[in-house]
Image 1 (cartoon, helix red, strand yellow):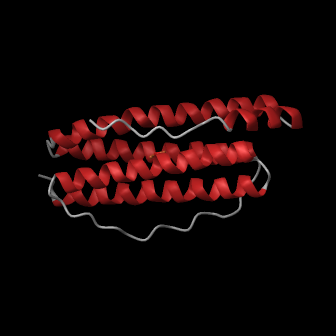
Image 2 (image 1 turned 90 degrees about the vertical axis):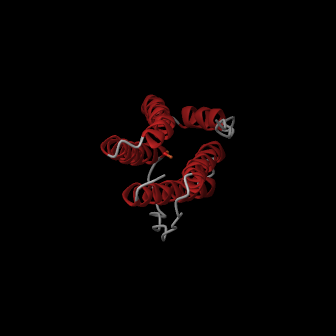
Length: 169
Ligand code: FEO
């Protein structure tokens, strides 16, 4: 059983995950336009991950007898800078999402909502991985600098990423 407060907060998180998906879809389109197919693939896989995060929360609210409420999704920026600037923006966005997840955990503790505390643990761990992935790519892009060959090689590496749906517990 979810409190009204918790239901509203979880619905807010669905919206944030949907915006994340929209943002990465937008970044993917930008990379495709710029001829960076591997980067476009990486961001499209990220889009799929974010959709699965939103659905995980959607299913949880339903399972707990709560009411899912969908709100408008904010428009993503549409224009982006270099690949390095895109990953710096991605990391910043993921840090915002991590903070939001931690606030949900705090609310679950305050409300002694043990089920939601357990449910959110998956997201706490996932955020560590998301930020680590971004930090790794930022480091690689800094190494590459203005070297076109390096960027080409990295683009090929990112072509290999594929979406693995999260395990259903
Ligand atoms: Fe669903 Fe990238 O946080």
